[in-house]
Image 1 (spheres, helix red, strand yellow):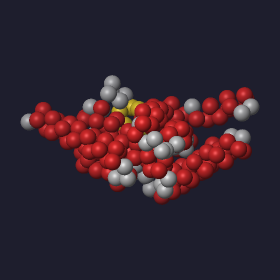
Image 2 (tube, helix red, strand yellow):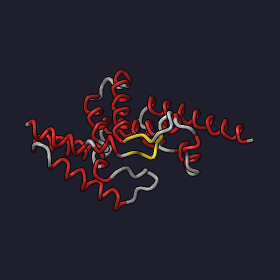
Image 3 (spheres, one colour):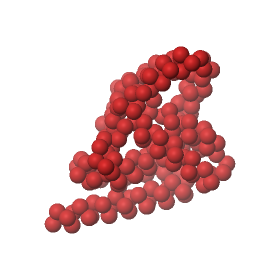
Amino acid sequence: MEQRKLIEFLGLIEKLKCNTRHSWTSSGRRESVAEHSWRLATMAMLCKDEYPTLDIDKVIKMCLIHDFGEAVTGDIPAFCKNEENEMEEQRAIEYLLSKLPENMGCELRNLFEEMSALESEEAKLYKALDNIEAIVSHNEADISTWIEMEYEENLVYGKDNCEWSDYTKKLREILREQSVEKIENSKRIKD
């Protein structure tokens, strides 16, 4: 990639470091979209041995790019996202990909299509881990950062996407147990 184009593109996606998510860190500040994507990619890398037949490098790429559109749109929590938001994010992705060399833009466009279809094992793993990372973040954050609906949402979020694999299913179950414990502990403190 030509150096000036690379620098220009990095400037566009730099907003992923600035745009915050609904999630909070354990230190009490809002998490950036980039931080979520980084940890998601790290999760995929660390799960490599659990999925020896999968192309983990492809999964890592999916994790790194999955929220590219949010560099333009900002984060909209999954429980608030509607069809118009999805379309706006898709337009933002197309805009960003148009700034890349044709072969690279085509490669990433194909990855986005694969992720959207959720048919390949790699796409299924990316999506399960994406949901799991959000739950991990919520469980790490102080419960005072949770909105009312998250007390239930954290118990069910991503369940369907994790069912395809025994590993992600078990990981999701452990996180659900941690969420229940966190909720119960907060009730004991209030009482």
